[in-house]
Amino acid sequence: MRYQKPIVFFLCLLPFIVLLYQAMTGQLGADIGKELVLGSGIWALRFLLFTLMVTPLRQLLNLSSLLRYRRMLGLYTWFYASVHMLFVLTYLLGWSAAIFVEEFAERPYMAVGIIAWLMLVPLGLTSNRWSQRKLKHRWKSLHQSIYVIAILVCAHFIWLVRSDYGEVLFYCVLFALVLLYRLKAYFSQKQSSVATN
Ligand code: HEM
Image 1 (spheres, helix red, strand yellow):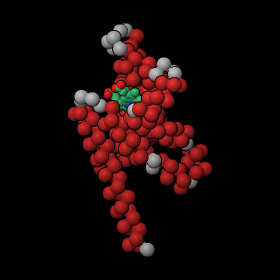
Image 2 (cartoon, helix red, strand yellow):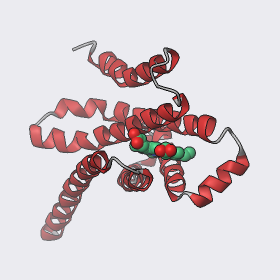
Image 3 (cartoon, helix red, strand yellow):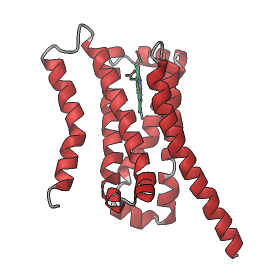
Image 4 (spheres, helix red, strand yellow):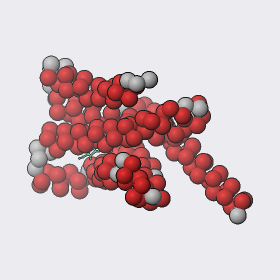
C-alpha cells in the first residue's frame, strides 16, 4: 500500500507526541522531568526491541515485508534514546558538567546508558544505502554491534530498577529470546559453511 510507510512513521512518532501532550496538559504529575525521562527511556528500549524482532518475525512468520521498516525502527530507537538523554541532561543534571561527572562515576547505569547511546551514533549515521555500499562487509559487522547495545540497555534497565522487577524481567526475557535466536542462526550458518568447505 502506498501510504503504509508514512502511517508507520507517524505511529512511531505517536508516543513522543503523547508524552509531550501529557507534559503540557499537566497529566504527568508533579515530577514532569522524571516522567519524561522514564517515558522516553522505555520507548527507546521498546524500539530497540522492535528493531531486533524484525528478522526473527520475518523468518518465523514469513513476513518478508517487515524488512522495509527495520531501518525506520532503528532510527526511531536512536531518536528516542537521544530525546531520553536530552531529558536526563535537562531535568536531572541541569546541564551541569560537575553533576554529570559525579553521576557518571557514582552510578554505573548512567555510564552504561551513555556508552549504549554513543554506540548507537555510528549506526544511526550509517543507516543509509550510500554507507551500506561504501562500507561493504564492514557495514554488517558495524551493525551487528546492535546486539552489544541490547545487552548494555538491559544492564542499564536492571541496574536502575528499584521496585518493579516484573517489567524488567519481561523486557529482558524478550531481548534474551531475540539474542538466542540470532546466536543459533549464526552457529548453524558457521557449521554449514564448514561442512561445504
Ligand atoms: C540506548 C540508550 C538508552 C536506553 C534504551 C535507555 C532506557 C532506559 C529505560 C528503559 C529506563 C527506565 C524507564 C522506566 O523505568 O520506565 C531509563 C531510565 C533512565 N535512564 Fe536511560 N536509556 C538509555 C540511555 C541513557 C543515557 C545516555 C542516560 C544518561 C545520560 C540515561 C539515564 C537514565 C536515567 C537517569 C534514568 C532514570 C533513573 C531514575 O529512575 O531516576 N539513559 N533508561
